[in-house]
Image (cartoon, rainbow over all chains, first blue to last red):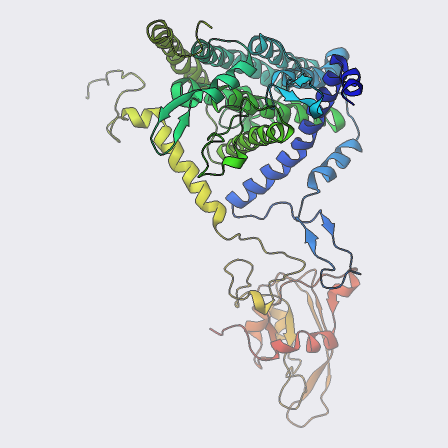
Amino acid sequence: MNSVLQFLFTDPVIGLVKGLLVIGVVLQIVPLLIYLERKLSAYMQGRLGPNRVNFVVPYAVPGLGGLRLIPGSLQPLADAIKLAFKEEIIPKDADKLLWYLGPFLAFFPVATALAFIPFGINHWDAFGSGIMVDLRVCSVDISVLLLFAISSLGVYGIAAGGWGSGSKYPLMAAVRASAQMISYEVAMGIAVLAAMATVGSVDLQQFVVHQATNQFADLGLFTVPNWLVFSQPLAALIFLVAMFAENNRLPFDMPECEPELVGGFHTEYSGLKFALFFLGEYAAMILMCSLFVTIFLGGWASFWGPDAWWVFGWVAVDPYATDGINAILSHLWFMGKVMALLTFQIWIRWTLPRFRYDQLMNLGWKVLVPLALGNLVLTAIACYFLNPIGVGQ
Amino acid sequence: MSAPETPQPEDAYDGDHPPMTASEKSYIPSIVKGIGITLQRFFKPNFTVQYPEVGPYDYAAQDRAIGEVNPRHRGEHILVKDEQGREKCVACLLCMAACPALCIHIEPEPAPWDDRERRPKVFEIDMLRCIYCGFCEEACPCDAIRLTPKLYTPTTSRTERVYDKTRLLENNPEAQVPQRPRK
């Protein structure tokens, strides 16, 4: 049995399975997010939101006939069908190559960057075969750097789409979007630099292991894990703000601000190309939320350890265990945190008004970048003198 | 002659409101307050009326604030019946004269009864022309034509929108008792 599994679990096979799994899950979360966004926004505005498209219990079933299951839950599917059957209109002045490349360039880097996110524990004894599986698609030691390098390419998709449309509003939106994303990437990068200095690694899995195996404080009753949101609160705040700007979400949704720019960089797009832009946007949300969770909220680590018998010790993740249940638990912890953060992002969107463009740039360059730099210097000094666990290993 | 105003920097205190404190400038307290408000709003009841299923006439929904028709709303007309079930109208044509949209068409005939001389043979209201002003109601000396709060009566053709006497007499039988408060 073991030899069969070892023969089967070659690196390409494991990589392929993990890759398909991640892409599949992300593509399934996007409709869920769209439904969540519509429902949350509706309830925050005193409406009901989509509640007509859903499965209905057949009338033949006694008692339950006609019961609507999760009202509106099929709305994303209905949207997708609508988009698929829409006529695709290409503007006369469009640059055909860029026009076709745009949506793919917007979606591809995000999907690729998701490969570096650890979605579970770093050593899972796959079905008892003795092969340790690292629960992320691409196990490289420089995953933070690679992730930033690849996800930054997403700007090209927006720029190509806006430029290729051959229309002035998408062009302006594309210029705004690229300026905004590049500016906020600076602050975000420096904030992550401070986190890297604290952990002493540029490997995302090492980030999580560091947070899972150390304590931030022992309060007697319980111990606070060394999540970087506790030890690097300023960097976490800067990353959070920059995350909204990176995702082009309200309060920073300059690239799509409807009153000024019609529909933003995808004004001229229709049909499935528009859907791909949409998909890329939501996938980018998932990517950024996963990144925040991994770097600052402990990734797959649980808030309490398995020895904390008085608070659900059985759902805690043991960072040293290799069994399958532990791996599933670690994944559930990760997904739970990501979903909570995504909900928070939607919540913020329907709360705050939009910034003005100059306010946006002022916040980025005059507030967040100096704060992040100061934080980095302080962290460097603290690391030099205190040498916290993890540095210099 | 007043002295020319000295130019002020843009962010100078203009006297209307005090300068912002550090916590106000960081926006964080206001953001927390804002997300608190949206969270409260999330758990409050919704205003949506499920229109085709729940109409504004549903008495079960009478206590809701939105979706209820104002009892003084001027909707479709009725011809009021008297105690003996006859129409009250004496075909005086005053409503026809008062109508600014010229939507009422009446053809009188001699009444077979002793208490009045005429009654309408044809009484038609073109609902597509009607502007629901209520002048016919005000002009009527016998309180024979009234506007009810009845709000929507979709039809599938334009000819159906011309209401004849039978339809006006039978229109919304509950509304044969006065519903709109009088002046």
